[in-house]
Length: 374
Ligand SMILES: C[S@@+](CC[C@H](N)C(=O)[O-])C[C@H]1O[C@@H](n2cnc3c(N)ncnc32)[C@H](O)[C@@H]1O
Image 1: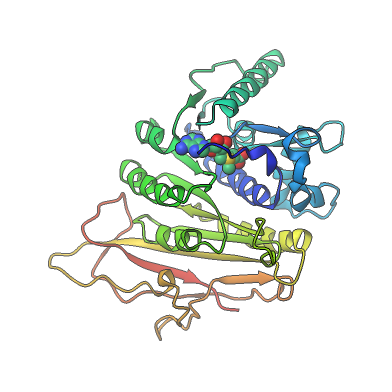
Image 2: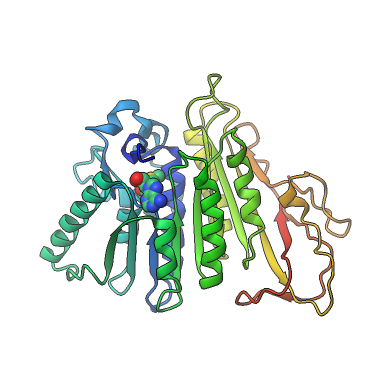
């Protein structure tokens, strides 16, 4: 089913969270000179007009970039995202909003590679045209040589499938954004299958999955399932701008699940998320949550029972006595936005030996979850 058009949702609260995190992840990769590859499995049109077409219909940007536009108290860590959006609106009027391919292209360097996938026949045309114009403009400015076909590759096809042929990237450095529409419930299953496969091909890559927080069971289960995929670690951040609508319609909450996140990300999120809740929050149910953990592989000589991952099973029970944790994620809300103090590590039962390295998998994974108490 290909009815989804991201233009209807451009610049909403979910885009703010996704694109701010994306920029953070790319900047981290850009700290080393070695080139990296960015793969966008579900690219959309690349950039969107906010004052014409689809975006006008529900004006969803008013839940996201709209309230941020005139603010002069944006935290430093959110400023680059704001500069990027404002940079594409030189008149000062909020007219355009960047999609993930545009954000990436702005942050990435000439040596880095973009690999973009899009399945919708109309969106792929718009994406290709947008990038043709952008690259031509940059070349005119002498900013960058047009090396389309090398630096940027736009693929009309299924991003879940296409990813397989790309991993691992030549420099073994890279980020994959997986951002499907979730209009069909199979997308939830495909995200997990795709990640399991990708991590076998490229265990040290960073993977970012955007997902809607909905009452449907597949949505609730997705982050829990992703926590169990063998990796070197994960971070899960959600932003809710309100409680659910009484009619059950509308997106009020979304998350970014990052596998192999940079160590700097959590601190950055702790700086920015309370601000986003304050500025975008609509009622007392507005909140953010940050959880992180390590999925470790266990090397065993003889069969042992895999340790229990309490956090991933969502029991909400306290961690082991040695950790004094609550088993709850760090939560901030409009009511309790100053309540996120301190932190405790909760861990699973001891394991024989751990391999936090390059994906040698000899037994079922155990999870070490880091959660914070208030
Ligand atoms: C949420 S939008 C992407 C938004 C974009 N990542 C951004 O942040 O600006 C999802 C896009 O995925 C496309 N799509 C759906 N299924 C796909 C698939 N299997 N492979 C590639 N693209 C797909 C849709 O046409 C839609 O444009």
